[in-house]
Image 1 (cartoon, rainbow, N blue to C red):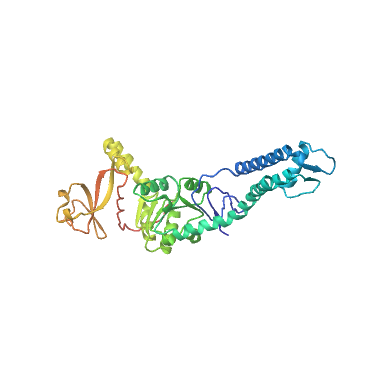
Image 2 (spheres, helix red, strand yellow):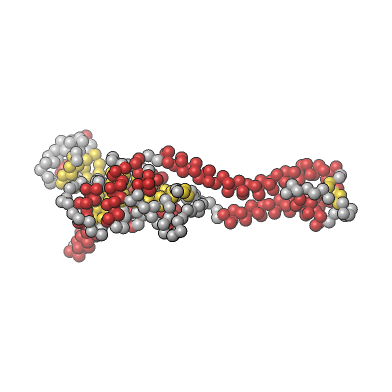
Length: 373
């Protein structure tokens, strides 16, 4: 069974083993008060209404008649207010003067209605909460199109989201998939929708609407998991761009064969950066600057403008690293580049700005390799 959890509520369905959490969708949380605080506030409001009613009755106590005696004290006023507001009405204390009856019509009756609204409203809110959750979830699904699915919300997944959001992607267009409920809680706290479950299962990816996604980022902790997620995601969505991260470089060809458009080798990339920093600390700083989105220098991809058509790469104003022509990525010094064409795209190094577009991922087909985890 699938269960839905919406902002600010903790309706959780679990198997006997807590680590085996059934698949749930969690939408970004809104700022709401704690349930105990809400109940406490309503109780205080109800007590305030009761106290006000008791005060009104006690002030006009001469207009009431008590069947047990002719004297109406403060306790009798509180008793009458309690049974009146709760609509019990035993009839042992009744208003008999015109002023007391008018007071009941104009003041006590509205206070009775307010008292019931406060108490019954809490119950109605609990009863209607599931309906509200289902309605919000259905609306979210119907509006979700061309979004980005991020599998894994660890260090790599967070950095990937920060990078794509720096280019203008809205948080509501991102869906995080992770097997850990705590990790998904962290994602929803930052404004992203989350799905709790194993992304190697197609029913979990269906909850993330992978079949309608535009981009899929796979940042799992294990290479074998990344391969299975890539296979499943590619089978469900043939047109999405899939980018996956692996720890071992020898597993990259298998990810490409599984359907990934681009594969990033995290371990070897970090190792190369470490080695470069040892040989040339300045060059290492430049590379780290390029990797960090939104600060210093950035790699960006942009189309060729009309004024640049017919120019060589070196004649452009920007520092061009590569030229994307069709499905090929050509180096700036490749003779095949020749003159720039209108349909070309340039990968350039520019000063970072919040709206800089992302650079494309290079596509290649290395030889086959086995899976190492």
